[in-house]
Amino acid sequence: GEDVEQSLFLSVREGDSSVINCTYTDSSSTYLYWYKQEPGAGLQLLTYIFSNMDMKQDQRLTVLLNKKDKHLSLRIADTQTGDSAIYFCAENVYNNNDMRFGAGTRLTVKP
Amino acid sequence: DADVTQTPRNRITKTGKRIMLECSQTKGHDRMYWYRQDPGLGLRLIYYSFDVKDINKGEISDGYSVSRQAQAKFSLSLESAIPNQTALYFCATSDSRVSGRGTGELFFGEGSRLTVL
Image (cartoon, rainbow over all chains, first blue to last red; front, side, top):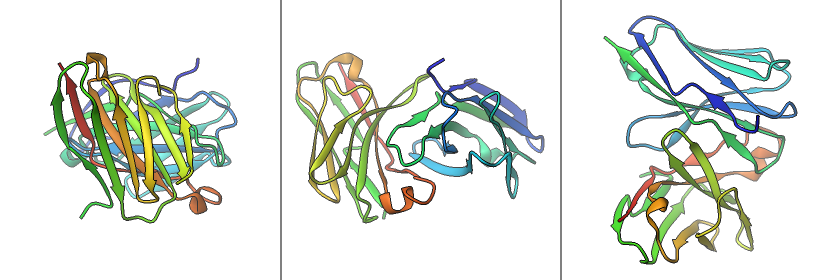
């Protein structure tokens, strides 16, 4: 398909792990990103992965990339109520202006 | 103070009115963008500018125009607003020097919520 696809909602309990999935469109995409949008705010870059990597870990965040299936995931360990936000997957071909965003996954963390 | 500032933050207007949304940045970035966010649709690119003399249409430019008055300022205009332009609008910036060797990260303003009645 032509769209970057994400499920729209995810609900987890505090302390559990959250996994947000994304399917992207362009096998030549060079960078893949996860942005976080908190209520009433703009998007902020959470993490990114270069297409020659399979995994990237940054504290509680783990990004997994499956290039064959064009699948990207974001795992948040020990999810906290402050992680409640909308998470956007995005892809970008090297030095190209065309940054494509998914629709965003709204993560709700219940106490 | 925010690095990317949008004004107004909220605006309610009527069909047919002309509206301007303004964006200014203190990041020293050369590239600026206007996106629109609709529930369930993510962000869609309206216009982008790689420098003061460069303006490009994005995915959904119809009904919109832009002006890059200076490197730090990029405004979005709706010449005759219609209800389906009701949305949350974001300005963003990026640094081409980073894009060339790095992530191409976008820096967003806090958004301008526009309601067209």
